[in-house]
Structure formats: C-alpha cells, structure tokens
Image (cartoon, helix red, strand yellow):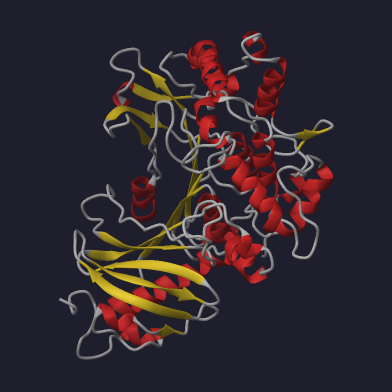
Length: 509
C-alpha cells in the first residue's frame, strides 16, 4: 500500500532523497522537525483518521508561531495540493475540507490551513487582536508571511510522505483569505498554479476605517426590513427580470427619504451615508459603499447578535484600531474615537501597507503559468463589490486577460448567503483551466433554503458579461439563461488611496 503511494518502505526514492529528509514508513513517523528554509517546522502530531477519505492528520507549528493542519490522504491521492485562506483576524485553524466536484479523475487532494501565526484568547474569539499589540513578527505573519510559509512546509511534507512534490497546487480563500490569494500571486508567484480570491479584502489600509464607518451608522433591524422591502420593490426589475435579486446594485438609485416618516430624519441620513461610503470633504476614503439589496445582511453585520455578542463591523473595527493597524508604539484609536479623514487613512497606511494586496504587477505569476479567479458577491455587506471592480479595471484596463477571470455573483452576501444565491464554487473550473487549458466560461451559483435544499441555480459569466433570461422556463433554472453584455458602468473609482496601488515597473529585457 505504501509503495503504491510512492513511499518506499525498504529504501529512499530519488524524490525523497532530494528533499534532504529521511523517508517515512507511517503517518506517525512525520512527528519530528523539518528544516525547511526560512520556515523551520515542528510536527506535534500525525494520526490516521478513518473515513472517506482516510487521511493522515498532521498538526504542527512553523516558527515562530504559525499553527497549521495538513491532511494527507492514504489512498486515492493524485498529486494535488489545496491550501485554504484564513478569514477575519485568523487565530483559528478552520478544518480544511477535501474538495469535491472536480471530476472523476481528480482523486483526493492533500489539503491544509493555518491560523496565520497566532492563537486567539479565548479560543474561538474571532475578534481578538491582543496578540498584535506588541509583537511585530506576529503581525507580519498575519499580514503576509504565514500563507507562503505554509505552502513551503506543506509541499515539503507531501514530498516526504508520498515521495514526490505535488504536481499541481491550488489556493482558495475568501475575505481576508481572498486578500491572501491576491498577495500570494503578487509576492510569491511560484507558490500556486491556480488561485481563487473571493471577496478579497485587499484594500486593508482603508478597510478597517470602512468597518468603523458602517458600525457608526446603524439603524434598528425593523427599519432595515422596511428599507430592504422598499429597495427591492423599486429596483428588482431594473436588470430586466423581477426575480427577487438585484443583479447589479449600481442600477438602483432608491432614495431612503421616500420612507419618511417611517424612517426618522437621522435614520434617513445614516442610510444615505451607508450607501455612499465614507468621505472627507468630498474625498472618498474607500472605493465603494453598501450595496442596494444587501440590507438584510446588515442585521448581523451592522447590528449586534446573540451569536457574536456585538456587530461584526464593530468587533472588527474596534479591535483592529486598538491593537493592529497603527505602528507599534504609536498612538492608536478605537471605534469611538476614529476620525474619518484622509490624514487618518495615511496614518493607518504606514503599518497596513504590508497587508495590502494592491499590486498591479502579475508578470511573474503569468510567466509561471498561474491562473487567477477573483469573485465577489454583488450584495456583499462587509466588503463592497465596487472595490473589486475598481481593482479589476486598474489591473486589466477593462479587457479580459488570458490568465485571470472575475465573476460577480448577483445578490450574494459576504462569501456566502444571500437573498437568492447563497453558494459559489469556482474551484472545479479553475482545476480544469490549470490542467486542461480552458478558461471557465461560466460558473453556476446555487441558492439554498434554510433546510439546505437547492431552490435556484443561475449561471455567472466572466465579468463584464451577465446572465440574461431567455424568456421561457423557470427563472430558478440555470439552463434558461445565456450570456449577455454587461451594463457598462464606469468601474474605476477616484478615491484618496489611489497611491496605494503598485504598478508594474519597466519590463527587463
């Protein structure tokens, strides 16, 4: 069995010898130190876990404190590695799932995830940033180093366990994980063959201020439901089909003032500010604002819930402003004291520029044959989808390159959930692109009800194309839609952080 997996029980294969590590005879034999350059690693446990698939569950630490989990299938492995991104402030290792739906020849991939260099106190507190208050190494691991270090370590351990390095490596992340995906393609272009960056938080310098903005402009949930119903009544059909979703929120220009007196004057002003996004004397402080149609998701992102004990936006903003986004040793701020000014954006940028993934230079990634899929929900209540469109426009000039695709999922909230469409998985298409050479022409998004049953499917085409109803059949069936030209909005946004983009320098001869 082990020999069939490429592990030579009686000797050392050339692939294993090349790694500089002794071969393993069992899963448990992985419990040791690995001298990976710039990523010395100690595996604390390695245990066979029964199931389908059966796998070797490897857990350890990359110096100085990057925790990770790597799952190595004991059978069916076909030479692929998939690494997942980490959401929010990380500090938690999300159990990496084995991918499905990538075709019968895909087999089972090795999968891994990391906590990005720190644990949280208490465990499960996703808003904790106390680890960052005085530890620059922990910050840097979170900002940029941890995903790259894990890719090096995972490939090394895979080589030791199977006797050969992965034939193809993939990365998939959303939100902060989407930021990591773009960062890996920009800074470490040889780490992965294919990268998925969902709802990327690549504008990190401005994003924390944006969370503070929406956290300080909340309205009661009962008013949110009223607002959402009014927005949908006014704007649902503007994309050509009244189907319970707004395909492009930029089509909508609903005025919340029409809801007076059911909304108070203060509530009307707050809603207008939410849709507009933060600004300082006319200078936008973030490339986007809350999307029309996203309102139902405000009930837990802008307002406190029993599950989180506070609003998600408030938890993110307050903890980052207190411990993470200003240089160590300089005065910070808080949700209550943060000033929405260009000056404060500049002050935050000194430290957080390390976390931004705003480079427009992908020459090395392209040269290495890398393929990139960016996707974003049009109803994202946490990270405005307009920011991703702005970045895409600056990256591509409005043209679709042969190495990257962007998908905008109508009505979808932040990374998952939505009024109608709730799930989006571009991984099978990315695998086919990397290994078969054909770029994905569409990805089918899925809508599920509260029981998990599929109630809608809808094709999503590479931006700027959109799905157009053929005029017959159910609007809940993807088969009844075809690709059509988009709505031709101006995607590039003028804002105060335009100097944060890094443009390509001259191409070396």
